[in-house]
Image (tube, rainbow, N blue to C red; front, side, top):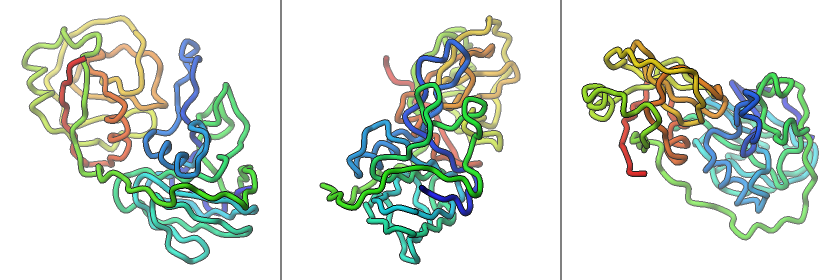
Length: 281
């Protein structure tokens, strides 16, 4: 078992996501930075869908009751395993009873912790991703225990991976969404010529940007949305849906981000700047 001594600011179990239930209003969920999660699982030679811990801004304190191997990928994080500093994107042997103490994220916003074989919490609707009310809790809590299989004899083919230094990038690649052509040329110019900052209102559900652009009067019925959908409110506020975002919405869907840009956005924090670049479908 993995014992949670301190849960950190917002630490949750995530895998690739919960699929085939969007028609019932259930979000996809899953790791916000899918590339960082995939890198962690690849280093441990896990299955691509093995569950990991997603650590946001401030890390947890954890005790490993069984031996295993671990790796941390994504945003660089202050962390020590039994008092020894941990490097990012490097595989470590973990002894029985070892304690991992995490501090603040140093750059970016989210870090991913994986163990050999993945974390083995119960699956709900085909996924281990925490999302309340599908799962009992939205995040880890103190004294919670998470099962995993003991491992002593793993010999990783790759001990370390040079992670991409993309945290300073700000360009989000987008495609036209269903209501894009209803925008005025002024709105399009404001979107693609502008630089926006992340507002305080950003989490696993959605990310709002500031400043607002001009108001609009586009009317539409509630329609399907996806992670990475960029909506425009009547007041001119840009909202980007994340992996816990609603499955339908009544605001115009003006842009759709590609997966790499969704990963990039997940590593931004309040006040960070982003811009939009249209790519050809």
